[in-house]
Image 1 (tube, rainbow, N blue to C red):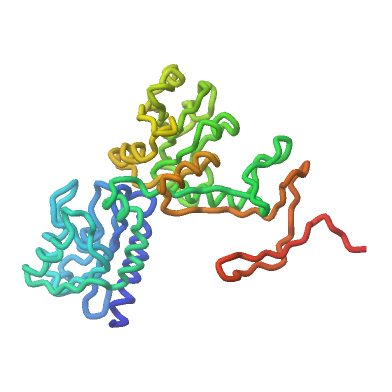
Image 2: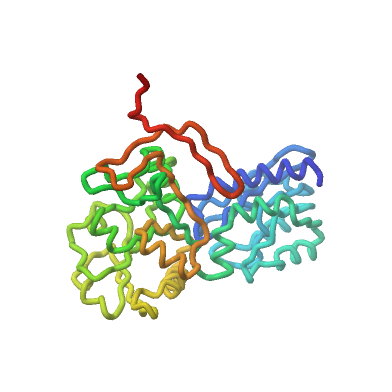
Length: 360
């Protein structure tokens, strides 16, 4: 495969990544326009409802687009949605060659965009860095195929497998850096889900507060709460008008009386059927979220909620934060000093010292 093609497509993929926080429910797309081995235009899809990557690149290239080559990370759209079709813009600009990473799984586009370009006399090649492009848009691909959000389960635990600390000890198992990373993950998803026990015990805000980009402050993930067998107090952080973002409270017909008292402009009640175990039917919940164009869901807990998602085979990815602590039945968690870490077969091997041990 031509090294120049890989170079330009790599740049296009890097451009596409810049839209990660703002394009949902659309895919991330980057476009590089090259003429005589010089980049004359580039762009990426910046926000849903706004111009696509190809349009930004063509605007920058202007008349130099005629006879040029376009490197695009996803098949150009060919239908009229919130924006005009990109295939028409590429044809009108006089683009000579188009190199595409991967096909668009959307039935409105899939294969049709390529066919239109070729019928207009444009040479099209597909498959440049397709694995990287597919990985970049794994959430979009999953959502288009299944009409459900891509589910990420996240938890922190100690080296001895504990997910909870003792009540009189620090509330957090993980270190501040891991907590910061959690907020980076939060800012990349459409919604966060927890169970009622987590709400009652921790009273979390479930917001992005440690952001790595100013863009994160313009959009907060939707909070989704699975109601339990107790009323949710109105003084919880999720009901505080100063806490940014929307909240969806999920209940069943049997538990609806426990959530009827919640009246707020940024809180929505969602009533779903029970499963055979008399719990909220999670597949139905994901279907409902998909209808709301929620493409990604971060399930933060607690343990029972995680177990339910795994039991239904609904989890697509996990984020596990392994703390360098031992909790066990100790009065307080004990910090360890990691001396060595390696992978042995499919296992991970740690060697660690208790920090309080002193040599005499």
